[in-house]
Amino acid sequence: MKKVYLDNAASTQIDDRVVDVMIASMKEDIGNPSATHSYGQEGKSKIEWVRKNIARLLNVSASEIIFTSGGTESNNLIIRSCVEDLGVKRIITSPLEHKCVLETVRNLKEKHRDLELIFLPVKNHKGDLDFDFLEEELKNEKFTLVSLMHANNEVGNLTDIKFAADLCKKYNALFHSDTVQTMAHYALDFSEIPLDFAACSAHKFHGPKGAGIAFIRKSTGLKGVITGGAQERNLRAGTENVYGIIGLGKAFELSISELEERKSKIEKLKKYAIQQLKTNFPEIKFNGYSEDLEKSIYTLLSVLFPFPNTMVGFQLDLKGIAVSQGSACASGAAKPSNTMLQLYSSEELENTTTLRISFSHYNTQSDVDELVNALKEI
Ligand code: PLP
Image (cartoon, rainbow, N blue to C red; front, side, top):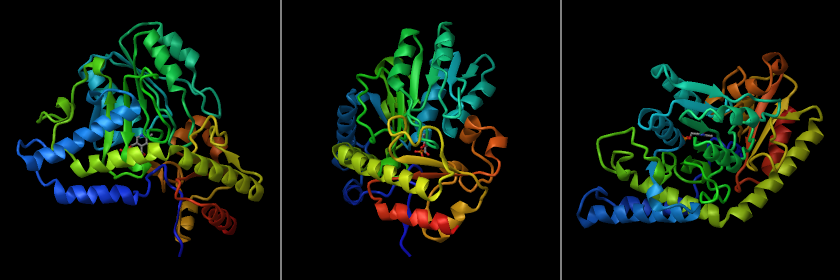
């Protein structure tokens, strides 16, 4: 049976060239990077090379790149330290954030009674956030962290993070963006976007699972949450994941150097999928802005079918096709995801089925054809 993998927003197939550099490092870099002998120092110098290279690609300085285990850890580190070390008194975020942001801010609110937690209103079915509301709130210059994701992982909506970051600067608020779905998928230049913090995860762009970055602007003075070692400039104690970092570096570099080629291939596939789905299921809708190539991330399409089938993900899986029913964290769940419930009422979602189809440059038109044929059979 041919495998059709269309769940790239959850995780991507690792690139063979990434595997190669990781295997070489596993064989060569046997020492602890904190050791002073050459067995350790060789690994350490490779880590520092990756750090410099990623800093160059993001147009930041190398000391602003901290290696972590991925998006969840990076977001936790940033948000928790903002409250617990920097003394942030108010967090403004959106109800459409990934669980690792939503649960973290709720947890902090429980622990710190004086912390104010504000969610931006979602203005409509498309998922537009109320930026006028944000500006009104920011006029009260309480020490604030604003956290807004760059691309939503369920419906793909893109947030104008340059606009949000400029607004935060104007009112002296800190700005964090969960850029897990966009980092290495877009050529982000952080010298032009005045954000303070961002998160990245290698397995979203054909790198290894369990490796990521926290971007921490030098001037913010954040502190580490994991203690017990001076690694990563005291911001993340623990022996470095040398092979993971080397794999992350390779995957990042390849994604940026092949970005235009991959993007145009994936955009064509997404357009083709939209057209095929509309032709075969004229009654379907697309969630958020996922049908709009300007306003949503090019790798993701979220579809709403006007009939209930909580088993469709499993039925597709039996046919060798992987998509996500809701986000990866909620996959297999029968009830609508938090994000969908922010866009529609539970009544509106009755008798519907949501599928997230997410692409990579490894996909082909025949993957889309197989998906559409399987959906027709189901
Ligand atoms: N943030 C977003 C937007 C994501 O899509 C994900 C992954 O699903 C994460 C954070 C978590 O990243 P990781 O799997 O590296 O912990």
